[in-house]
Amino acid sequence: MPTQMTNRPAAQETARETDGAPGMFDGVDLRRLAERIATPFHAYSAGAIHRRIDELQAALAGLDATVCFAVKANPNLAILQLMANAGVGADIVSVGELRRALNAGIPAERIVFSGVGKSADEIAGALNVGIMRFNVESLDELHTLQRLAKAQEVTARAAVRINPDVDARTHAKISTGKSENKFGVSIDEARRWFAERKQLSHVQLDGLHVHIGSQILSVEPFRLALQRVAAFWQELERTGHPINSIDVGGGLGVCYRAGVDRPLAAADYVDVIRAALAGYRGRLLLEPGRWLVAEAGVLLTRVLRVKEGAERRFLVLDAAMNDLQRPSLYDAWHDIVPVADTPRPPATYDIVGPVCETGDTFARARELPECSAGDLLLIRATGAYGASMASTYNSRPLAAEVLLDQGRYAVVRRRQHFEEMIAGEQPARNWETA
Ligand SMILES: *Cc1c(COP(=O)(O)O)cnc(C)c1O
Image (cartoon, rainbow, N blue to C red; front, side):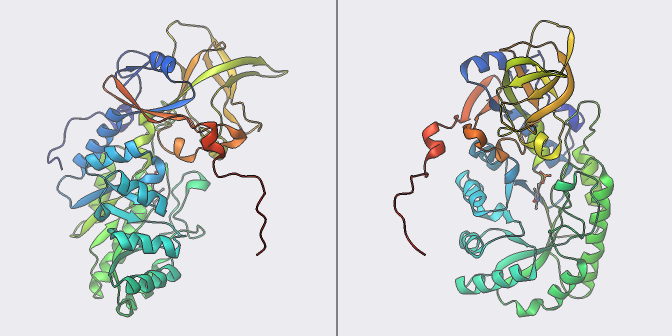
């Protein structure tokens, strides 16, 4: 871990694709890249991800802290490998993610398992490989963990996920820390778990976990949640329940809209953690997902055609909601810019994909330099919850993913073949009864 702060620019400036000449991303000419790889495809800058990791590690200097990347933000094996090589662990929410993380070389002792719906099989699998910690979200899960750990004759390390009843002031669908949300348990319930801790012969319940939501752009919700967690940690210490691990979750927001979204710098975020948890001597865990990778990714797409509608002008792209769900799912804004060399007059478009849904809209009434068929565009900040949420809706194959690094590129997922898309499907030939 670096021991001194370096003089880094604010978080929002670290990961623009135009680092230097326009159309260049991590030293790669995006137009030339799009001549070699068919659009749409996702491109990720290794350099931009490394800068975020370094910024966070520098801010954490002097703390016993482990950063566990939230795999769901971008589970591509090459991205996880990059995390593994940088000493970053994983926050997983399924056995599929566990297998990806292990496969990419992230050691089990750097893996935490979160989520309200861990199945018995998933818990057993994670116990089997000896992951660092379970973030437990219900009493039933705690009892299941005890039973399965006992059966395997191992001791599971566990943290209780606290629902601190804090409004993260983010989109309702990505808010997780209010008492009405399905996540975590109340401090009152957690207190009872600790009081009955001795009955857990095979669960070492010595951690607290909190994760209040995603795309959070101010320190206040974090401060409030951590203050509640800190008060509870101190109470537990006083009542004979030592806490060895506090997991502060993820949730750090990124810049989706230039000039509007102002993400927190890692140092400011970590200052809030340091202040709230002053005096805490155990291990700190962090689970950032979006902040590490979102702005390191762009979705490259071409204009299929310009359609003059009765009331609006449409830019129809070859990318669609199946490649990037966020606009249709959360009404999310993504900056969209042409990868063009010549200046053109502005025009206003509804920017849409080919999928048969009105929701397949990336932007409404967006001003862009005038476009024509074949133009290359990039949709920014798609490195998190982009490819990871993709589907094959409308029988569109999953897009390719490409990693860029100082002028070089590597395809880290090729475009899905039609045969792969339908693999597993079969005619109803072998009928059985149940
Ligand atoms: C999704 C998730 C994260 C990551 O959230 P980001 O907003 O991407 O940082 C971290 N922890 C848990 C438990 C999550 O569910």
